[in-house]
Length: 621
Image 1: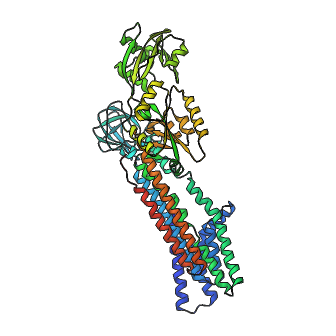
Image 2: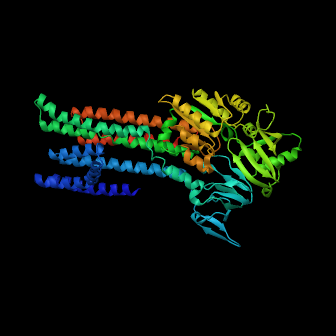
Image 3: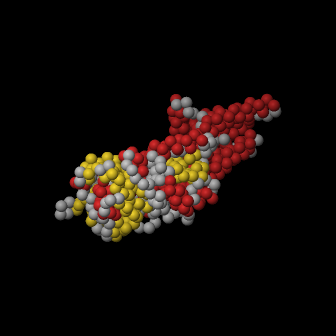
């Protein structure tokens, strides 16, 4: 229970006790009217003090048109016409509804935290001849930790000794354990299943995956969705309209009919209570919190309810190719030298790329098969969108694409084969090429097929040549393809797409999160694939697929639609019941207690409808 809920509980308990004492006093003893007023006023003061204080603060901020104002006018008016018992009862039930609201929000947030409670409690720090148990916060870069079976990985690290398997489910939703060996990356929050591992700390705790994910989820509801903003705006206009209707109820009928003015004043006050929109205001944020929690449980991190809602309005999905639709794991398929030995050509290319972490560079290292002697490499110059230039054993080596060849002014023959072609220039002369191929992700085709079934457009952007791009697009049946793009070309294209879309349409960009940060930021919805260890992804993306599976987008869309369905059901039910209660209040069919109890019932039903989102089932794709 939160501190706020605890204080509210004490307030309700004290007020209820005073209310019972007042009720008993006037029921069993002869109490003068002034004494009755004082007794009930004491209970009312305890129950309403926080509401009045909150309203005073809102008046100072000029944001006072809400349900608190309706309750204050209604209950204060009831006191003015000597309906003491009903005034206190109405405020009591109202405070109980606020207490239930606070409990529900607290429980939902706690449930989300439990679903993704991946924070490690301790770390085994390896010293010279012993180990020491320390807090993960105390670990420093370069220190070595020991991981035993069943233990959570405390910080992002790299395996330095041992083999084993790691359970990634708590962090990424990945159901199958992942085998790890020396040199593999470990992420905090995952669990070592078997084998004793030693690992070197590569990120401090606050910069590690578990801490970042927890921070993002805890702050996930900070940005308001359109539905929440609608509820706020609705209340802003709804409150004065209701007050006007209540005022007309008090004034007009007594003038038109020969009926008691006090009776119509009471009906007007009951109308205010009946119109209180508590059920609507609490149920909408609860549904979004539930949707965010359900998505987190299934390995999809959504930064706010606003992005959850926007996702349902996306009509075009733009995909990066490498690392998103394909695995980004390249393999050397063919080495074609020109007046040079194959091994010598591969060695020069691998050494020139030895300082790069680009997938193409890694594939060259893999094919080279030996650890690159970086002492032989100097003057490395990476040229984004072109390639790499470096000196290897004093020789000027350029490794890159056709754009690099054209920039160098080298005569070469373009290779028509499907695949990524890496051209090599040595000392200003063409030396040959290396053909590298990528693999399409297993479930990429399922995702594209599912999107087409939903009549959603698909576009692919890539820096690869036209032939490679067309081959991948053909296999996946992607409708539009743009190839040979520089990073700035992707930004320009996305700006063009957004200019041509209608106001109601939204565009999502899906990238690997490492070099797509500008485009992820520019899109209406930026979705990062496997952005677990990429700072750029966590900062730029709105939605992060924790596991490298494009089908996570299907889960995200389904959860988003289910959440919006729950929100709409809550809104229709709450507003419909308000209209019915207002009509009944006008004709005198409900009392003040009945009205507030009915409002509590509406709120509880909406809360239950929102809670089920937390348990939204994971379905196959």
